[in-house]
Each structure stands twice: as C-alpha cells, then as structure tokens.
Length: 242
Ligand SMILES: [Zn+2]
Image (tube, rainbow, N blue to C red; front, side):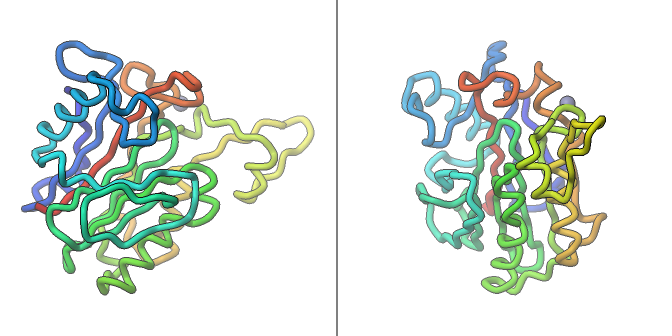
C-alpha cells in the first residue's frame, strides 16, 4: 500500500496519521477508501480496503470518527468514534478517536496542537474554503482546548492544483478573481487559499506542510472527481492520538 505520511507530524510520539492513495496492496491501483457516504460502502472490497488502511496506519478501525461531508463550513467537537452528520470538520482531544476525511480533489487538512494534545480533520472543497471551514476548526480548537494558532502543526494534503483546477466565474469571484475578456480562464489554488486562512489566524508558515501534489494530473497516485467524474474513488486522510 502506498501511504502518504505528513513530514510535519513525523516522530511525534503517540500520533497516528496518514493518507491513502489509489495504490493498495497486491498491485491494486484502484484502491479507494469510503467513510460511509458512498452507496457501495459495505461491499466486500471496500471493507477489505478499509481494514488494510487501518492496519497500515496502526489503529483499530473502531476508533473511526468521520463527518458525512456536505461541502459545509460546519465543524463539530467530538469525543467518541462514530458518524457525524452535516459537517465537514471534526475536532477532539480524546485519545483513540481517529478523525478522518475523504477527498478526491477537495483539500484534506489535518491539525495537531502539540501543547494541548488536540487534533482536527477538515474537508475543504471550494465551498468549504469559501466558508472558511479550516479557520472555524482552528478557532473552535482555540475556544475548546486553549489551542494557540501560532503553535499548531498543519498538513494540507494533495488536492486539485492550480495547474489544473479551472473554475467558472461563480467560483472565481468568491476568491477575489475576475473573469476578464481575453484571459477568460481562472485557476484556483485551494491549498494556497487554506494556507493563507491559517496564516491570517496566526499560524506559523514553518508549522504548515503543504503537499505539492495535484490530484488531477497525478493520475497514477490519486483519485480525482474532476478527472474521473462519478466513478472517481476517494482517498482518506486520518489523524488519531493513541
Ligand atoms: Zn495538476
């Protein structure tokens, strides 16, 4: 299995984290992880993939807590595993609660407060990013756990890159772009937008790792909804205090 291990979290005792790709075990290059939001979620193959993924990350599957993602700006504080409806971010300071988000072009963001031992996981597509969902997650960690944004460690995962992610005018204007005649194409850099939101809150640039990968053009490694449409699989990013 090919897992992405964020460098920013490497060597931290008791923190389990990683992100799946489309490379699974036994040469499976259509490896996908679904967290319950896909109708084939209980197929044997999907179950096996989930089992492989959790064993590779090093935590039991029953630790899983995930949002039923809906491109919202809602973030929930949780203290137990389970499925959480109508939100796109979860935060916790409870051990053995593995926060996970799935994505295929949208930005997965993992948060860790090393001082207060609190974590967060956020799914930020263009709607979530326009709604400042990652800022809401950090602000909630601040209010609930006393997190200092200047000390938080962040992983901004692979997503649709500025190289490929062309957006229409409706989306472009939400991020301060204008479609002008003769240069009608606007490409959005969602990872950069999330990065600048974190910097605005006082996060330190050196504490934020931004993946350089684009899910659309790196087709060997990633699923992409923009590229593959409804048949696209999903990657999952997960973080857990063990
Ligand atoms: Zn690209």
